[in-house]
Image 1 (cartoon, rainbow, N blue to C red):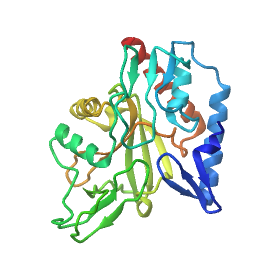
Image 2 (cartoon, rainbow, N blue to C red):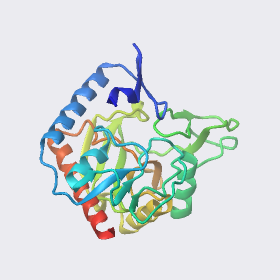
Image 3 (cartoon, rainbow, N blue to C red):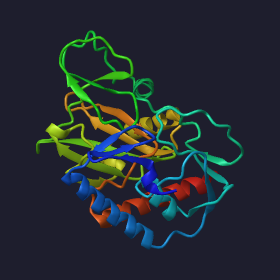
Length: 296
């Protein structure tokens, strides 16, 4: 099946069929397609890791624009009809619990990544709230959709009734002194954080799926040991064996907030230089290989 069948195309842009997310054509999109395509070609041309194990897919096979595509190549996991490792891969926000056999199932228990479920799980692990009540809110807060990949957050300043299919969260002050906002995108592998993408964008585009600067660092430069343990516990509670966490640190109280979970994260980030893209995917592939090897 052609990769183009994953999208509905129009003169205005494209719509992702599985999630309903819409991407409008723009000059920035053309640049992103070029940078993403260059990475895919470079990854496809470099040698794969030595074979570790056979891998089958419980739902769909990851396309090359997903971060795990390159990680599987560099981790030595090859597709076969009945592999000893099963990857549960779907962009749907809520999925059915499939029956699990004796194979190693990756994300088999991660069936709900809705914003409300993320917020409830976060509060249970970290002990403080991300969610807020829009009817009693006294300051700026966020309203956004429950679904995966919609990027439709808006800042509200007045109390309002809660609407079905919408979630309400406190507005995290993640601004930098350079006039940008800073997100920690944390790829996680069996609860570990092999690296962190530091993603920056202008404040007026804080909710856009666009980054003007991306750097790579390590978890221990961003988080305390206690926070790293809490993040790992959060992943276990979500059933997340592989995925990307969007984490913000609030300038007012210094606390971390996990605001989104993506078990089918795209990447590596387009604004990252090509050499660093390949290095990041190699690091994640080796972490995935180690995690799978220790569990088989």
